[in-house]
Length: 293
Image (cartoon, rainbow, N blue to C red; front, side, top):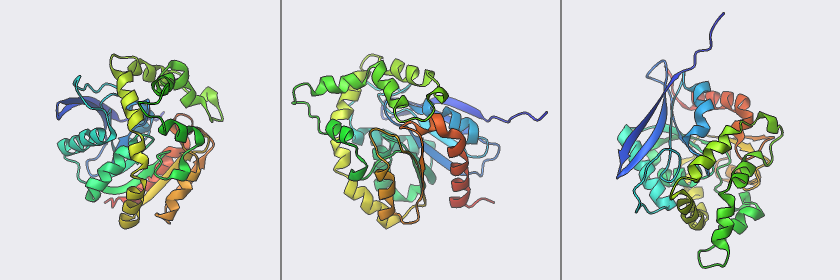
């Protein structure tokens, strides 16, 4: 009986500008393979990609880091939590690994971080995989717009944000909009909540929530970048996402007419339910955009 060949995955820390960045990286069977940088979302970390790495890591080099304020990454007490700073650390991480050409997977928070990276280094970006990573105002649900409008001086605003950082709030992000809740592994939201409950983590997430409007303000800049550089793009989008609606997926076609778009019958964390369908799409896309021997 043939055995499934699951790749080895290394789990390491790398010092970037005083931040001890945790990352996981697959060890493919060959060295001359496509590289994909996996940028996670809120309130998760690189562990959200562990099954994707198992599925594809034998044929492709997949790298996923935890941002400051997430997962196993350790940031100093005086770290300033903003999307610009998360992009700074991600940029430094990429430089430290010596990556110069890769496909970038952007999901949720990974989109504003990744597009900042793309602005700074368009030469690095060989292609995009977009999974519920919004860059268009029409992709924002009413709930998302209300959340983004919160400001620190607004009465009750911080309490509203902190309400999302509870176990029911975290679990709800996984379960809303999914077709088959029984396919979701509960340890996903339990692990996310474990990290959210660490000292200082909720304060970091409150700061990032209040900074989220800076992303919407950059949408036009990112759209201009897409029009200029026209990276090959695969979009796999959970249509039941309560924050980022499927209109946000189709909006990419304005700037990327050739984008491949797949709307899936699932929620925000599409990989949790639809990995068997998404993984082959990504493999085909990587083979298409990367010149393999």
